Length: 318
Image (tube, rainbow, N blue to C red; front, side):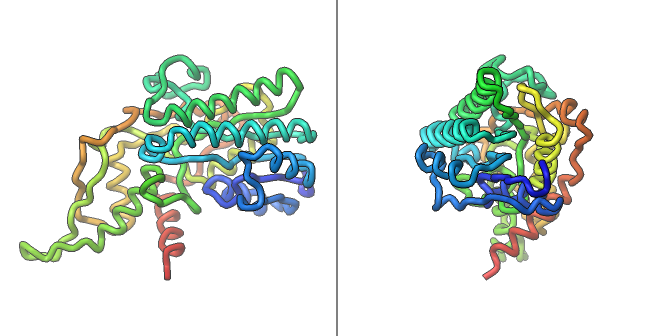
């Protein structure tokens, strides 16, 4: 990409898209195309075709998607598969037909089987059953990978796919009905600081109820680190196979909750609701391939949580 290349970032106001925009602007890329959702419904084929015909982007980052945590995936399976399939089908096809030089599709590590061998390598795709709690979303993302590969094979379209681990950061979603575990914990534990029990010689902060038993292990990547990975891959990666992006390290949900509690100043303890699902027990990615491109994460989990919490507090100030 040249500094004056026309670059379309779809989903520019979300967690991933906004990080990509910040990354590109910091490097001097100024010819960015950012279209608000209300001006173009990416599920609408005609609207997407009009968008590409009007702007003729040279490079495209597809960071727009219908996403959610365990509860969101469970309660909105239809939207998870329909919306994501429509968005990616429309955008990938329009990008090809309008001569885009390079296209990036962003998915998720949930594409891998529930019992995949860890650390998970790229070649474990489609080697076993998916995690049932988010299979609709996962199937849509797998279809996106296959569509990029098919357009590359049949038409020579330069499309690549990145599969990141659990993401968090600035512009994350903190809606408890739809968000992922890390922002949910930030919101719950921040609110828990003000749930005070004055009995038994208090005041004491009351325990916060959390899902599962805290034992599952997850890998977390700060969104700005993913954005740098996107830039590196847009510059250096040209293979048909998708590429993992993560830290290569994981923590238990209990350890994550304890770290967040220390950052936000919550000391009331946890009450684990074991009637709620844990999800896949362990999921950590093998990142050898992207590390070979001279990329590696820079933001530690605690630092990333601190930066995310600072943004969360600023965004919720009256």
